[in-house]
Image 1 (cartoon, each protein chain N blue to C red):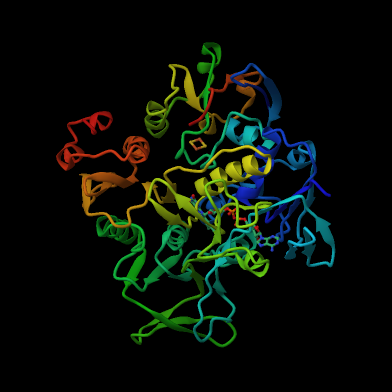
Image 2: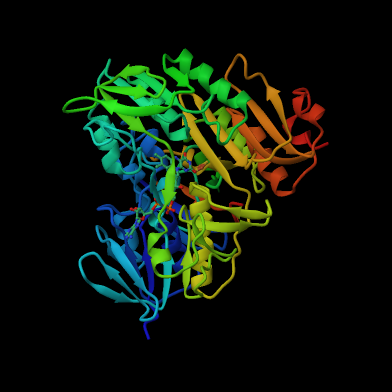
Length: 406
Length: 106
Ligand SMILES: Cc1cc2nc3c(=O)[nH]c(=O)nc-3n(C[C@H](O)[C@H](O)[C@H](O)COP(=O)(O)OP(=O)(O)OC[C@H]3O[C@@H](n4cnc5c(N)ncnc54)[C@H](O)[C@@H]3O)c2cc1C
Ligand code: FES
């Protein structure tokens, strides 16, 4: 029987798993399958420095070319896995080949949610998930070009920031009554709306996109409310869908992500899953989570590698995330869902530096820190400890961050 | 080009050539050198790339900016000679540098 470890999907989680498998002492064959023509790369720069043209491909690539050779990994770029046959313990690829496995790691990530309105197939309507998408978007980057962003989430707003800096005329359309509504308090949303306006971006909330107009290419976005937004191109950022089909077709348990335990094991003990595609238990929050972040992909990559190598490294960390827009570094630790009180440190009304502490019945569950690294670092420790905080101490900037917990 | 030696906490050494303009964090992660995580890819947002820089090399590096300072300030294993390796950019001036890694980045 093969003792090969096969990895499906070659992204952030997969690259980490390869490194960790070798570090954990696994010496058997590793085969890595990715459907993109590239070796694993980082996605965050795709809406930041790489989109802005400040860094090239060599800086987004996760590992150097010789890393895979040195780690003795057989790589199959541009190869899509089409089936997992659990009875035969083999996977099938799009080009009709089969590979036997001893153990398997599914790290297929997620894909963009597509917008299903009339005109969606017009030229000039783009999404942003991979390097090819960046190239298509950059082709429109000319001073004065009109870009409409559909969706006021992190990615849409990051693209807006980069484009505004490049002198494009940018409009962001958001269905909710404020941007980033899914994850942050209105205080943070309104702060970001203010900054984007100061930078010359038009933000329209409460706008539902009903269709795209144009003959050969997109010329305008039309809203359900009957408004028309003329444009040269569109970037849609309305969320992602986890890539779980391979797993569900193979009969693995899937429910808003591939269901794994804290060791990243799926319902088949020989198969692990890691990254955007999983739903995992969180001891910190007491319920299952599906996360879309680099930290989650890296840590699950490590955990899955340990499990596959016959060791234990349970995944139980407070999630964190960052977003760069203009001169703003937003660092988020924890999940604010269900908070009962949002306490502000600093002044979000003017200036560009403050932090919001989210308390649930007094316990710190999350912090959004804008240009506030100390608050972020402190919050990382305090959320893990489930610290109970006094709102008055949070607000009082005369008290150093390190002494905030008393 | 700078020749850089990364010393793991257990004394294991890794010497590699780093092209000018690339950070010491990026080069280490690309090679899979253990001991530097670099979770945020150099955005100065995670502090999982801390290294110790011997005194004789300190003067050759660019100064510590506010963001780096605040991140370092909260690193559990911070010493006086700590730096974030994503903020150290390779150049001929630091050819031959040795940096020491902490026991863990978390
Ligand atoms: C534009 C953008 C900006 C982001 N910014 C941030 C940020 O600032 N901070 C942050 O923490 N996170 C950010 N993220 C999220 C982060 O990049 C993801 O959470 C992370 O990449 C997830 O890693 P992964 O390995 O699970 O999936 P991916 O990195 O997506 O890798 C999965 C790979 O598997 C491939 N694949 C899928 N199915 C198959 C198959 N059947 N056969 C072969 N290959 C397959 C996919 O094509 C893909 O290459 C951003 C994402 C995007 C798109
Ligand atoms: S890599 Fe994240 S702070 Fe250096």
